[in-house]
Image (cartoon, rainbow, N blue to C red; front, side):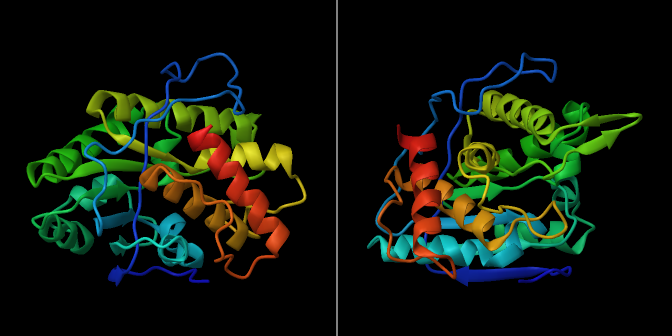
Length: 272
């Protein structure tokens, strides 16, 4: 597990995908049912034989080698792809837009190449912000424009709320309340841009209710455990490939029954 900062552009062998669900926008919506059946936008055009996928994010992306897990699932399911990762601890989409910043300059250069899918992961603080229209959306638009200019599709990697919620002034918000804010923000910008979403955060909420014995969060209660990263990778596979990750022979370091449950959660969310 890698827990420090890093700036890296990695080549892997695999693929990634996402979608967009229908949910009321705004942070004051009624309580969300994370088990409700949802429709997700699929890649259009569909991915070819060896799509080029770029994951862009921070520690939520590089913890437990999430991209590598994704690649291994892809290969175990008999598929091919070329997957790269550009990640840096604590980064926001705003920093990735800053051409004076090392990471921003590297991403700008990387986006001059043609990608089938570019997966953008926002910092949790911005994704949970009630002023996401100022903190997140402008930078998502800038990056999306660059991605589309080269013929690619933008996919947002929706992450998960802190395991035990957060204090907001004198009031504590539960992880379900926080996840609902995150869902609303990602859905709003994805709907505006007609982009894809990998709803890993919703997978977390579903799994935590169905299988409370499976710990999806790391000891810091914010980052993913290996189980959490595997669930996110299964969700990405289901969405991007439009194929169930169930019966995948690659289970990382997990117990077989745990991996099967995580595969099932991802398949049910995306495909059923």
